[in-house]
Image (cartoon, rainbow, N blue to C red; front, side, top):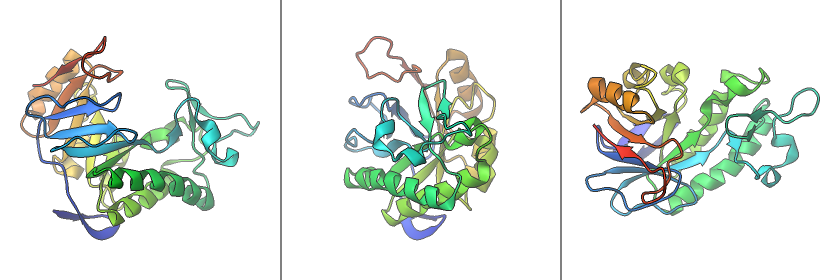
Length: 245
């Protein structure tokens, strides 16, 4: 057990350098030997695993804008929604304390659901959305917002991961973040940016053979590493890839 960040509540951290699987595209029986699983918040936790609950906490999944109050969707000076073009996701508006509080209230409801399903941790994705915000908000606002999520997660006994965003890893204690879930730190040669602040409490997913090779070459036995297909489809479906060191 460990205490973390903005709460005195004890949380359970993921085991170090354990075999893991990234299942946010759909749940399936974890492969033999796996100890850590990340699944979407709409799925159930996996029995006998350390379970991380994936939440798109800074952007809105395509087609779901209507589930949000219109003024909480980020808009430019012309009133046009600001969209992450790579994924077709509208950014959430974190510009004011009032809006951050209202967005957090909705996301904290999902965190409550994760706790109720037996997850041990949450993974709030798109922490780096400020880089796509057309300079309408910045890293300060993103961190003010994630503190609201980390504080709430801790009151529910859940650990909370920093997702990517290496530039802010050094602030992880102030932001109440307990470990890191990172994509392609091997490929981008940036695992060190996370292993320092998080003390090797890092779980990494690679999407290429070369990325896996780099991550395993430097970090096998130090952090958790898996290669998945970029669409993270369930086992048995076309395109499924899962490799380890």
